[in-house]
Length: 345
Ligand code: PHE
Image (cartoon, rainbow, N blue to C red; front, side, top):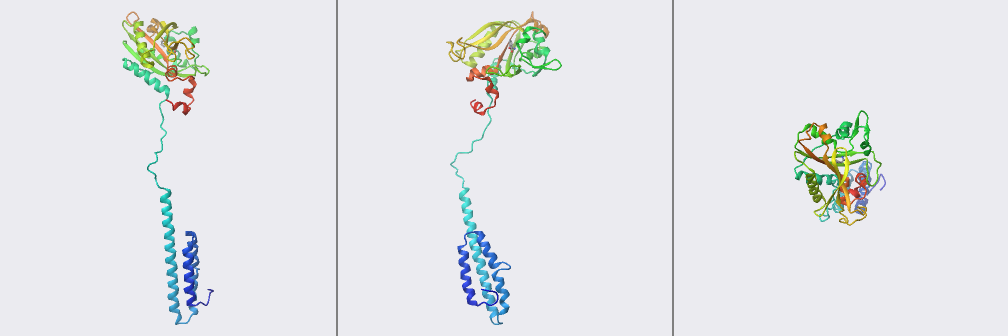
């Protein structure tokens, strides 16, 4: 169908051909190409209309009508086909995006409680039940509260027992939670019955049983007539609630500058029940804390009358308790943030 001359019969054939081509188009893109070729501003239909002028007066209206019919037929066919493609595209997407409501949901990664926090909570709960309140103190302490007031004078060999992080100007990272004893007694008259949890710091190189930061719970009980028997009773109740009714306690004489007498307290090995195994180094016993009767020198430092009042104090390492309770053999595991470890608690 070249430019100038055309016959009406040709147009009839052409219409059949183009409708065939449209029905066979494989994509919306091909349809668009056909639309441009036939109906575009420089398309074939426009070309025909331009050439109407070459026809005679009589032929012209008839040809015009036929060309317009061709145009409408092509337009309709293109629209129908395009709708078909769009519908099948919609169906395909509906299929792809179908939600299978029988599939299990996406599991959210919830955080969980750190084993140290968990052990700490169990310890606090037991003492709160026994009527103890909970106190806290600063992690950066003065040498006075960390040592002197606890009867550990400068140059006293007891200071060597604790490898201290010294901060300029008479400050230290507290080496134990015992300074909280002093702070509370300074501000509160007896009777006193509290526990004090928190972090402690010692300049120890990390190994299976040491990290430079660890946690302790301090306990203090001051009243008239408090004696060592009360200390034994409270610790016995604590150990049984923490490790089970069958656990036995052993008190070994020891030394702390702030208690007199002092003891180191063991529980019967919870692994071998006291028979002797690797965990208890074949002794049948596991050390869990230090304790003793408050030294009169400490009462003197906080202006409590040691003729009238007596008291006991104890301090335990929470990592140690958690390791025994949960069967953990390396303290460093607590602080490595390995989710495979932490997820087990
Ligand atoms: N503060 C001591 C320590 O860290 C433990 C302790 C506390 C001992 C209270 C006796 C009384 O080793």
